[in-house]
Image (cartoon, rainbow, N blue to C red; front, side, top):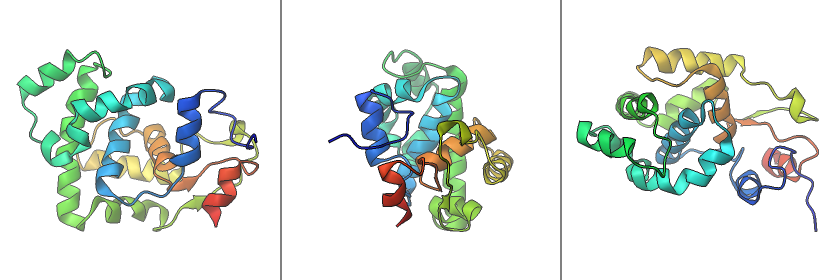
Amino acid sequence: MNKNRCAWPANDQLMIEYHDKEWGVPVHDDRKLFEFMVLDAFQAGLSWSTILIKRENFRKAFDNFEPEIIAEYNQEKIDKLLQDAGIIRNKAKIHATVKNARAFLDIQKEYGTFDQYIWQFVGGKPIINKWKTMAEIPAKSPEAEAMSADLKKRGFSFVGPTICYAFMQAAGMVNDHEVGCFRYNELTR
């Protein structure tokens, strides 16, 4: 049986699986939130399918996205990552990941959890949008702009409003499934 879903996964099995199981599901686990921050930063300028294809490689290369470990990366580890063909070998994004891990840990110290901090930008619960088509979905929002400004102030890099909005979609802070998509109703219940 074919399910009615958002148009963006097209016929890509990996994208369909991500759409059907993860995209838009509210995330409150700090390690998973950090994973989405890392992946969304690496996605800048690339397609999401490129990131999904390399996701397991990223997981191995970046110590299962454990910010405590990544925050301690030295130049030797960074050089090793720059040689890893399994990930996106972008020097600025790799350096940003290390820097962001340190800033992430600072937020955890201040708020108790990163989850507590990040969900304040949407008042603690997902924003439910009512888009009929992909064309209606914005690239950013006022909440993403506020998040971006605050993260930058706290020392994060690769957290512009567009990246923050993609993060919000991935982490379920917004439900941007099209209203005709089977996941829309599942996630608005």
